[in-house]
Image (tube, rainbow, N blue to C red; front, side, top):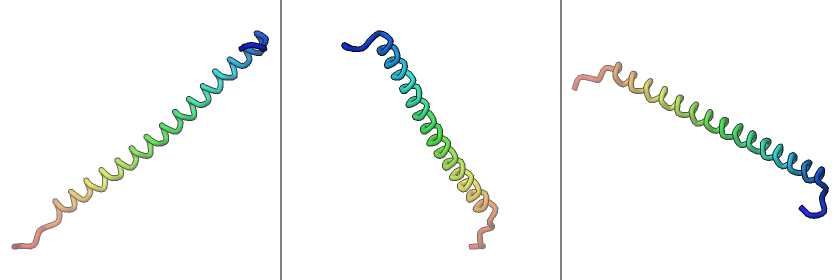
Length: 64
């Protein structure tokens, strides 16, 4: 970059690297939260479906 000293270039490059690391961590954190939320939702849905199947299986049907 014209007009900058080597020290200024180094500082700018390190700032950029640190900023990229910060953004990457924020994205990873967000993705982890989203995956955890979806997994919990699927776990609850599966548990509800399994419970419903057990109830249907154990509920006697009226004589027909």
